[in-house]
Length: 360
Image (tube, rainbow, N blue to C red; front, side, top):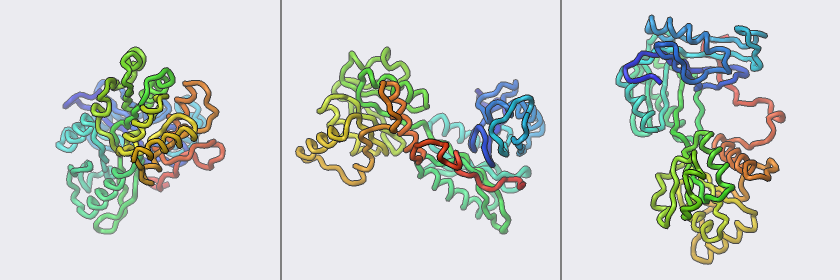
């Protein structure tokens, strides 16, 4: 990766019209030695971006490159995704704002990086917006105020998308601003370390979730059984050892033990987690809720809305691996505000992008 004060070029997809392998926000870093980290396409654009990166590094000036992917062949590769992609290619800077950006990444802090998409920097450098602060300063205070407002709206959403938005500047002219959204990795907490939890934990980690497995049985909750999990919590004080839970936390309960499931459900629904899934049929869920009600534990309507039980998308899952896939599919659909279903029944795979940055 690019180290501190080491030169490099950042390529970011800032606009997609039609179909493309990657969406807005996809990025690739090109190091001084030509080494690449990340992808901005299915492999057909990267080599050209590397060549352009040399030019950007020499001039020190960003540029926007447009690719029309409707040709039959591009650099000898057949393209199955006809569309238009615009990529911002810019040198990685060493300013205070870039340093704050690096610190936010290291600290896993949610942020939105705002960039005016002009080849001439008439409005100032990038603007970094976090939940608690704003770094950077644009010469157009009206444009900056509008950009910060939109950035804060995106930070308040569950899974806001990166996108380019046309805003009006102080003098009334239209300016495109790219809002590059960065969220820390989501968190999946699994209550239960049975054999059926193993594929779920592995799949969760492979999909980029910070994965925690909680089970008081040390013989089951081991690194040998859950090699990809970030944290294993065993023992009697399991709830006290759970890290911070927020709206980007997802909880799955699969203890297969009535009392442990009841305790875990009470903890989960009273937490700030946005999704709580519990394995088992509807009759078992109702039995647990009634049991807790008899103990004086009552959940609000908002808390009950978080509960998904039976859990998972209806894909006819049978094996533990298929059940894990069903559960993670439901969690991702919930996070992305999708309903699941067959893509062949949808006219668009992705939400349509806004108008192109550079016109037709």
